[in-house]
Amino acid sequence: MCGRFSLTVSEEILKQYFPLEFPKKVLPRYNIAPSQEVLAVVSDGEKITGKMLKWGLVPYWANDPKIGFKMINTRAETVDEKASFKHAFKKRRCFVLADGFYEWRKEGNKKIPYRFTLKSERPFAFAGLWEKWDKHGDSMYTCTIITTKANELVKGVHERMPVILPKEWEEFWLDPAIDDTEYLKSLLRPYPAEEMKMYEVSTAVNSAKNDVEECVKPINSR
Image (cartoon, helix red, strand yellow):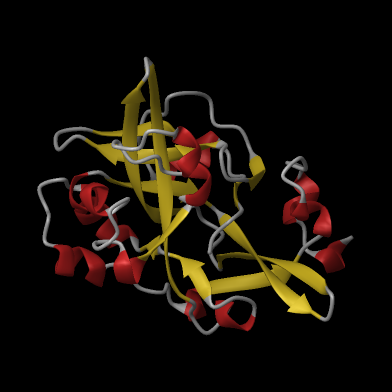
């Protein structure tokens, strides 16, 4: 699964890779957790825009928005089959912006956190889905992050990893006119391990209350 990630680059650097207008000022986030707002990119078929979405997808048909707490991730292998995700997979795809994500490796009774980034350290896009929930007089925009089997680097820590979209696939992923599920699923692959790096970080990241720079620093640099 993907349960924590970061987006620490400046807005200036982010716009070098994603030249969009964002809904509010981009500030460094070191420990983004479920139910919090995330910076995403969506398309209406004509315009691609940045949008703040709550992490934890609430299907449009759900009666209780608390279902979102169970919907932070969906599996690439079954995303077109699950009732909660298959409609969004057809027409409401997005990507969530990040520059790293965390996974934990079990060592005895301990869980050791690691951060994964691209070797280039540039920001990137997680493949995601979004929904608008509008009931009982409330409106909410939410999202989920798609996961796939881990690549050779990540699998030493965890069996799953978030889908990171290569730059050349981002436009296709966002296009709501594309609804070929087999083609779309073919984009949901493990990112090449040779283009990524990992390092151990502080257990400060274990608590969502700790959204601080310490979370992203290598443990051996302190």
